[in-house]
Image (cartoon, rainbow, N blue to C red):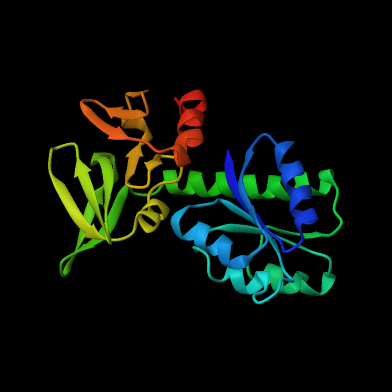
Length: 232
C-alpha cells in the first residue's frame, strides 16, 4: 500500500484524483489540499510515499513546493500546460499527467510509483541493517533489529532496545522514520514508533510488544488495522 496526498488549487481537480485513488487498491489517499502551506504543515508531522502535485498554483508553484519536502518522496506532477514537462522530470518526477487525464493514464502513472517503491524496498533490504545517529559529540552505530520501540521527547527521540537499555538522540520522529527501513516500522501515536515484527497484540487502543504497553491514537488507527489485516 502507498500513502499519498494531493495538492491542487482547483477543488474539481482534487475530486478527480480522489475518485481515481478510490478505484486503485494500492493507494491510500490521506488528504487533499488546495493550499501549499497546509500541505507542508501536514508533511511536517506525517509522511507520504507519493504526492500528486499541481504545478501552477498561487504564491508557490508545485515545482518549488516539491523542493521543500523530504528527500525520497515520490511525485506525480499534474498540470494543464505541457511547457513544464522538462522541469518536472529534471526533479526526478515519477510521471507527468497532462490535464484532463483519464483513469487508464492515471493507473499507468501510479504503477510506475509502485514499481519504484518496491525497488527501493528491495534495495534497502539488501543493505546493512544499521542506523547511524549523533549522540553528544560522537556518532553511534545502532543495530536496527535491536530496537524495541521509539518514543518522542520534544526535540529528541528515545530509542529503547531489547537488552533493556535506551538512548536519547536529538532528532525528530519524522526524520527517524524516514531513515528506518520502509515497511518495517509503523507509527502508532504521535509519540511512538514500533517495529512491526515485535508487535504481539493490539487491544483496547493499546499496542503490545511483549510486556510493554503503548498507547495508540486515532490518527494512525487505519494504518494499524491495515497492518494487522495484511502484514502479519
